[in-house]
Image (tube, one colour):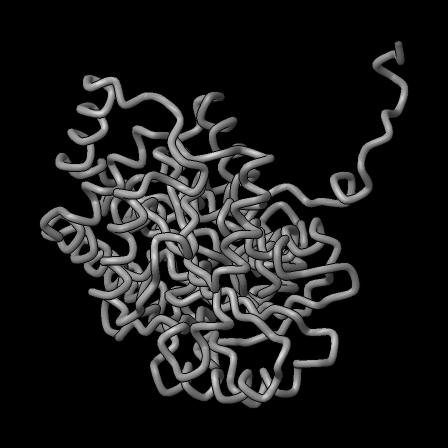
Length: 404
């Protein structure tokens, strides 16, 4: 047997994969907390609300009724039918249950879609700043991510012109996320229509539309990308229950796709994980059928927090931040602080340096923009209590003002 000091050869794609920066920052914050530090963590993408009672009760009833066995690989028919009803009701989309694959969270659904569609030598086009996992999933599938950068001036949205310029003969997939993680930006319908028009000129290009934050919106209309002319047959729509229903720990997501894509995704899932938890599936049915009041109350709370945090950040000289219209993140541009030095004489070269400075010296955990291919900013989650947000904002302001 090899000793612990010997190197172990790993699959090269695993060896090259980067760990999630959001999880790494959360882990470091928790480590400091265990040491007794009063860290306020604004790094996790998780609602700070409990799962609504009707959903929780449905899960408990599933256990009490013995609904604790395997279901069909793609999810039980009751859940897939409820998802189809949701698509028709909320998005004007007509899917059959056979086109729906339920998985262990939207993250798994995204990974399945990328692995089904992207092959060796293909490119997956990803607008940045983007969620940290898109490029890593792409590389693990053997394809290459192609990043299209956006900034504050564009409200962190990719234009139709930028998309057209980025598409090549190798492009196989375009990933869209609206509302966006990490920026909170929402593509208005006219901009989505313009993107769809560009994509319609490329016969072999699919769209993976990540709509997990669909119901966490404040000032914007949500349109599913598949609802635009000619796009349903070339779009994989990703959604789930974690964000809108505060069900992150239940691990339940889904995709809806053209039948060949859904069948291929189901094939992979059958060999890797099989169906998601039967208990979570029952809870998912309850979520889709319940009174939306708890979701609306949560979103209203997020809006109040967004407005408070945005006002405070914009009062700090050197901070530029567009107004996010969805999700529960702010993505301020802090590049004016790069090149400055800390009171300890350390130079802040980039967003990673800035985040670790604010964490180690001021007890606030944020996520550096380098992780999102948006190097001028950082992600701040306001899915936290107003008290914690106020404490964090004071520390951030103090830390930034201390730089020279």
